[in-house]
Image (cartoon, rainbow, N blue to C red; front, side, top):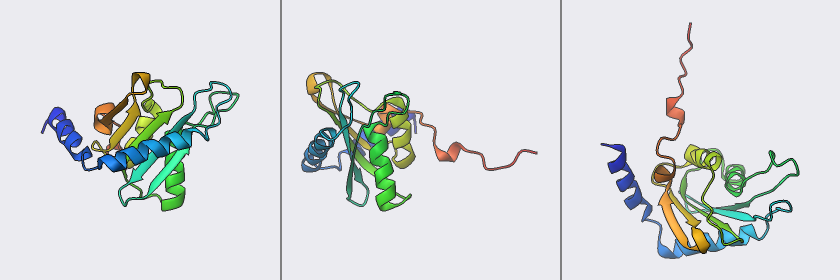
Length: 157
């Protein structure tokens, strides 16, 4: 199976998230963005994760005056999900929202973090330009994610 055909199947698998659940996730991500701590950039972002077992966990960005230590909303939501539900969490869908009506999909670091707990079919909901509701899959955002199965546990001698 080619990566392209896998991505097509992934897009179809993402459709198992109902329209009502998609709307709920977008609303919860926006609500989380309202709690963001972004005094420097004023770019408040929220994320809502739908876990495979049905729980929803939210997070928001938290800035730091050193900038480098800023935490993204997706990172915060994943950390909270692991803290609340354990290290075996699996993502079904992720919604990202911001209060600036700007395009805002997960950054590269967040894509890799999401890939740790999701697969290519994980639905990603995000605002496009002008705040338009957009969606894709994790496999389309990060087609060649580095995954745990690529690690070599064998000791080299």
